[in-house]
Length: 127
Image (cartoon, rainbow, N blue to C red):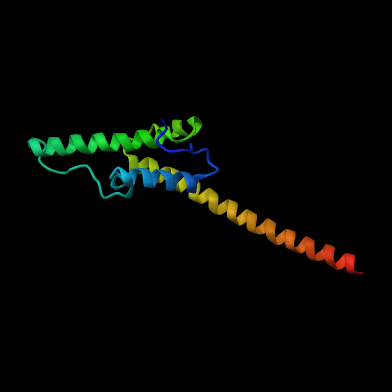
């Protein structure tokens, strides 16, 4: 069973990110993306440190694997270089937030152009 209902293919980043965020929040794992869950920094010899590191590693791996498995396979290959879930999330966010801004800019220009064309057409048909 897939962890979220859609796979990120580059065209629906905001929808995908929304689904992943809520899935992780429901499992109390969003901290691994927002950056508040960090690997423990302590005495490596202590048992408490070893337990904390093990738990952090398990949860980080869960989140990272869910992210990788919820994207199109062509994009998933780019995520194998990451060992920390937050880094993979930030990579995808940066990649698609920028492209969405570029698409919005392009669409805005096309809308302006279409408005001008409509005005010219209306003016020429009224004569």
